[in-house]
Length: 363
Length: 76
Figure 1: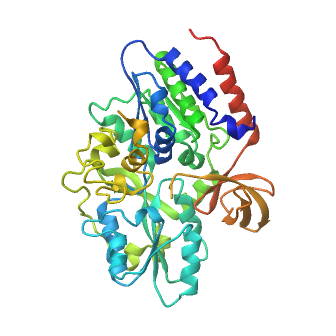
Figure 2 (figure 1 turned 90 degrees about the horizontal axis):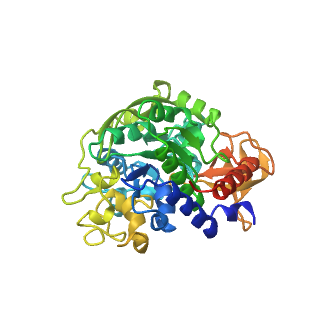
Figure 3 (figure 1 turned 180 degrees about the vertical axis):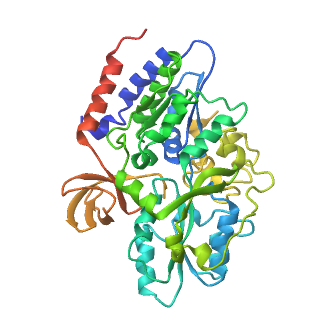
């Protein structure tokens, strides 16, 4: 059998599930938290929760980079769009609610908002239309930040700038450990963030918090294996950092990408939708790149926005405190076709993933 | 699109920081390879039009062999 088929082979999955049952404690819960929208997709799409013993629970933390962009930063993009700038972004961001309006609503009102597949596409557009001002709304965790860095440090046209909403994952993981009654027993660390940052940033969790932490890939058997490794550590009262995704994640990460991030950005405090302000959790362009920083170029800086609408429980879903189906609006007032909260908008949002795979998580 | 998703693709041709890659089934796309040290024929992980890491076949095979060892081990 070829290697890629083994990574999602159902018999192998059953065998790993059996090993999980063998190492799971007879009494008490084991609660494992992941922090990546793609992990939630794998777990839900392949129904992995149904393979786990009742007392092994996997919850989704703040792993959707679009969902955690605060409304104030969507408002900044909408404001720039309404001022006549061309706003470019990845498709997921389009419908994310701002305080009053999303970018899609601004577009419907006549603003020039364009979806791109790659940042380089936006740069090319700006070169072809020098009479217009282009802003790229740069959203994403450490996986995406080096891409923004490459272009910011490259040969950009004068009519191009960035509205940076990049955030960093380890500070969000640390926050979860302080949330009362969440009581996490282990972390599945996100594979593609780790491909960039390597293993070192997670040492904090094993050393200080004694939290089993396993970096995992995105095939169903990758995730099951990571769950096995965490449950086994838990049963042995161990707290190690393990790398299940060695075919992609090197211990040192991607040095070149880290250097680009370091050159282009400085780390600062940032607001997270549903979470609030976290120190050292956001990136902003360095002063030397200020001409490409849309906030400085156009004097736009909004601090306060309406993150969560009345009745929406996104703030609890984002930190894994409740499951989507525990929100009274889930699949009633809030659906993929007519989303209310950010978690239902993005294809990586926990509510959206659950809504698209209802059977996998029922009853 | 999934913002933490990255898809493996094979480098079919290379020119400076740009490569033509094959995502399988013959779908070719131009990607930026300035963040990786990749050569012709390598598999890279592509995120939003940029290669972010080179895939290691040896490591993939070792992972699978590790899984086999775990499954073969007897329960306690």
